[in-house]
Image (cartoon, rainbow, N blue to C red; front, side):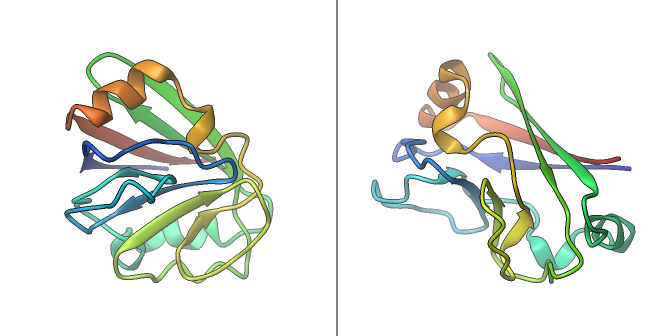
Length: 137
C-alpha cells in the first residue's frame, strides 16, 4: 500500500534532530524546530486513508517513507505498532525510539532529520516542495 502527499520547505529548516523527523500542517516554524523538515502539509495523521492506518497499527509492520525533492531522494524505514493512534490534527512524526503518541507515524526508524541527505535538506531550506510517499509492506 502507498500514499503520497506534498509538504513545503522553509528557510528555518535545519534538520539537526538526532531522533525524530516531522512534517506539519503549520505554515511557519522557528529555527529551534530542528526536527521539522516540511511545513504546509496537505495531510495530517487524522486524514491518512483508513486502510493505511489499519496496516500501520500492526505490530512490526514495515513502513518506508520515500522523500523526494527536485535534486534528491532519501528513504527512511521504521515500524508500526498496535498502540499508535495516528490521529493528530497537524503533525506527523517518525521516531528512532519506540515512543508512541498521537503524532507518531512510525517507531524504531533507521534515520532522523540529521541523517537525511544534504541535497534534500538544501532544497527544503530553499522552500522547494517535498513529495512524501508512505509505503506500508
